[in-house]
Image 1 (spheres, rainbow, N blue to C red):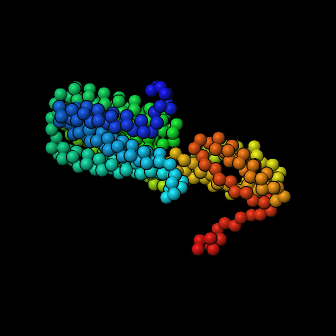
Image 2 (cartoon, helix red, strand yellow):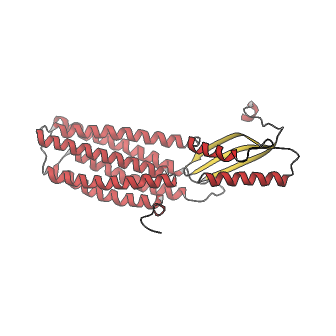
Image 3 (tube, rainbow, N blue to C red):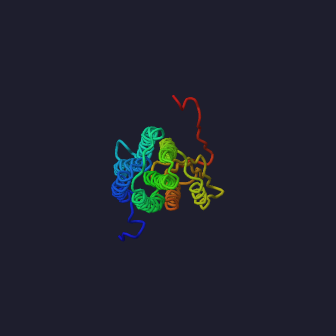
Length: 304
């Protein structure tokens, strides 16, 4: 398998690459802060530590999500990825709070910056690495439908914009001599990543709530069922849900009561296989019912 094919970049490989890049950017950004004494660059370096922790936790959750179904988890372990997204959001919020605390002191006690050129150069290099990694991660997340990869990629994009804001702010300090701009930029960075953290936690909570499949996937399911619809066959009570990389659909298929069980089962198998072929990662469950039988839902007795 070639290094330059998208199938090579599985979620585990991508997150291992994210750990490596996070370590490199920590070294670069910490060096940039050390030689400049910029609170803005310090805030940028702190976010890279969050990147590292998030990538390590994401790698652990993706490893768990790959485990096969067992007696205790008959639907698999796919939801473990949502914990990665929520954990990353919590870390981002904590980092934002720490940045605001550190920058607050510098607003009233600004310090001169040193060797600005070298500091900005190191920050730009680290941002380029994060930007490239985020682009590859987005492609891999789409291929594997991995929310852990998507969360890490979104965080890296936020990191790139953070670094861009810091670079602009420090450049403005160097041009104007207004030292308080450094702390102001750091606070702006913190507010930006704070918003990203809340978004990641919200997406994680929604994933744990068994949301329905995306509209385009529902359209593909309906298109597939249309191939089997017939005056003697109809479908209803279709429900869907997502669980990490796995997708589920359940529905009723009504057919003449005079059909033999073998004939009805053969049609059901064809429907399930067609659905799972049309939608990657889909698990289909079709319940057979005679044409004149309607199931009852919503009765209060069902809740007892």
